[in-house]
Length: 108
Picture 1: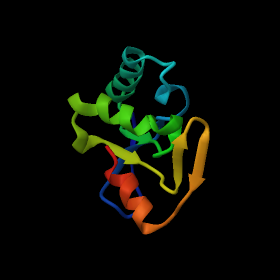
Picture 2: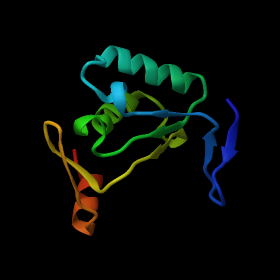
Picture 3: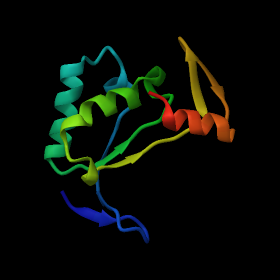
């Protein structure tokens, strides 16, 4: 997989990334299947993963964290978003306050 420099940073990211929302973050996509997809992407050279604290009802970042325990995290680039907060069920709220963004980063 070809890597590109990310802007003026020292980060090198794959030209393709993997989104950890939608079905990969959903419980309908079981843990073994999600693990297989993530590791296949990583083994093919994908090091850029896109997620958000509210993706897949709040499950996507937790699942990504569980799945990357056995790979070299120094080689990963993870983009996340904040401000959309999963409340429960299909309910979300918008909160871009410093307090909420900090809680989102420290959650779990």
